Length: 130
Image (spheres, rainbow, N blue to C red):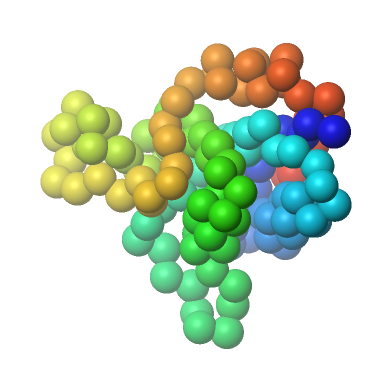
């Protein structure tokens, strides 16, 4: 079965974001396909390469990056939500005259069209967060 996941939750405020990661990992272990993972709202904060959680906590950024690299996953970050929260790729940093980009490797900024495509292409769409 083909799934897409939508992650709304901040990686810092609740277990919802880490639940999304564990769910994705289990789907893949069970032989399912993940078409796309779309980060929206505070969920975009996971793609900030500057995050540095305490050593005794799971680093969701590196966990998602490894899972995506291993399984060739599409990690799409809503551009409007990301820019609003200061998560920028090189183009957006330049556009808004910011010194640095901070979008982590393996993540892509894009619009809601990517979400619509994921919904249309998937058998199931699971949302994590509000």
